[in-house]
Image 1 (cartoon, rainbow, N blue to C red):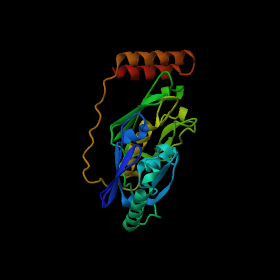
Image 2: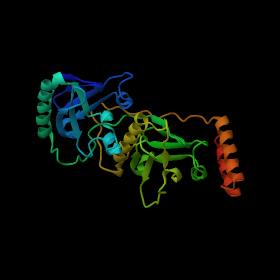
Image 3: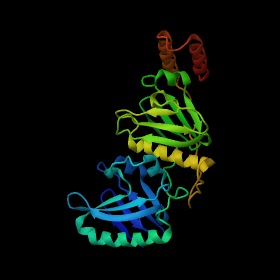
Image 4: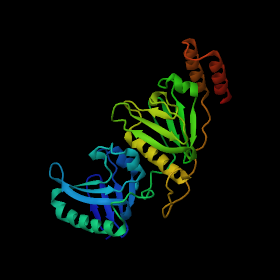
Length: 296
């Protein structure tokens, strides 16, 4: 192959061993597509290919990834809307014959490349590279490729999270990621830790989770980060091994930012409010205050 099929918001380039999906940039393009920019999908990463009628005079070419082949879709766990599915290419109905040709070619390639009915034993599609970050309702989340950091906001974080303090998690200490879309009620991103630790049921009280809200943790920011963490967890040995694809380059770690004194002062003030309200003991207040002052 090697031909290009252009549709709404994306073009698919059919190569001998993969499909290169390039997403357009523009105000009408879904923000998740813009964040992903492009994705190379090996034929062995796909389970099936379909072509079906779409809405308002369109047809839809849809490639379905195998379970376990794409960290983004694994993290999404079926929560993406159709319009946000990066494996759907919407085309004008007059291109149906051409789309059917490419669908047939791709089906043959998929069947030849692997056993599409079996789950993949490793990730075959690369997650968005770090560094990545986004703002949740109760804190800022950052991922530098080896560590996930939670920095709590005094305006949104629960007293349980303030008592626990800001968190940093090595990917080697994690066994997975749980992402609940911010487009539904009670959305959150939870890091699943290895071992027998009992994590709080409510994400609002779990120092290994951040909660979303209106305008906080949007899909195009939180899902790529969840996928990148999930891929790093598998690579670290906590799950099936992942081999780096051709052309991979080392990912630079994010520089450690110097704490803002004004931010530290604001957090101490909020800690004092919790103490005055009886939500933090005298010892907890002194210990946490000393910890915050030590960051200056």
